Image 1 (cartoon, one colour):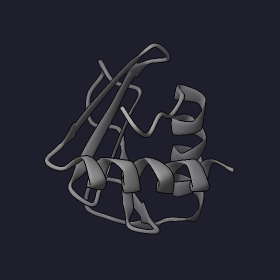
Image 2 (cartoon, helix red, strand yellow; image 1 turned 60 degrees about the vertical axis):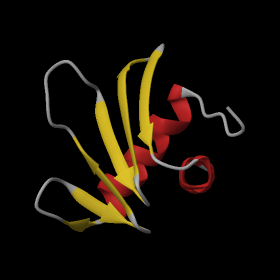
Image 3 (cartoon, helix red, strand yellow; image 1 turned 90 degrees about the horizontal axis):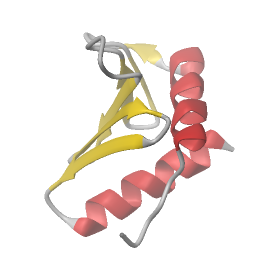
Image 4 (cartoon, helix red, strand yellow; image 1 turned 90 degrees about the vertical axis):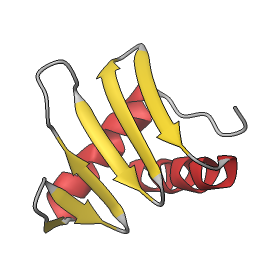
Length: 83
């Protein structure tokens, strides 16, 4: 995978979105990324730009995407939010 992200960065980005984002039907949206908790088996869900990322534990990250360039842009955006 060209872009890599660690679970701590995902959780930091999630916290920023939840603190600064606008309320959406599922959770909150900030800078084009929606963050929410949907199920008991996942810590957080993040989605945007054709990508859906689920953090199931600090060692299990599931990411769905149609194009690698969308995935890479999404991961870059999460890394920027996490800083």
